[in-house]
Length: 160
Figure 1: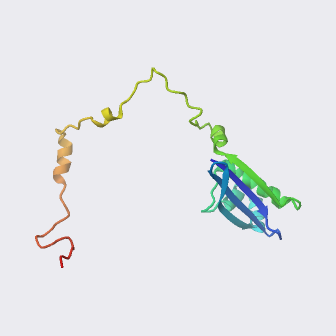
Figure 2: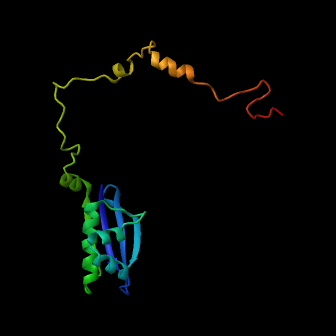
Figure 3: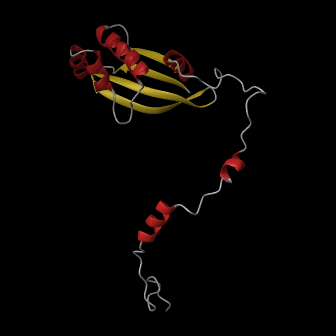
């Protein structure tokens, strides 16, 4: 999935606004979430280190992965430090993230060869269960039904 984050200052500079977009339809980005932060709060978090800034940026609604959060934090630091820069945009593609983390995507997996043994799912499902399992019988014999019905009880259904 492709994502875009727009990080911008409010007109008076008192707030930093982070907007998260994702490609839900082909080549069309949709707004998923928008969070506003007091610039002073983010500047204070920055003095405690980048991890504190990332923690301040993450919310229940917007929780970017570590790689994205690190770059978003860098962009926030740049906006706080600059008086001339009103906004910045970051583009991400999950394929790139997976490639950096060493995760295999369907494109990087090896193709099946003719030598690979074919497994038939139906054969796996038809496996018989042995009935002479003594331990299993002991367990079932100890089970008792907790549901008791009387002859006059129709399960709370009124016939009238």
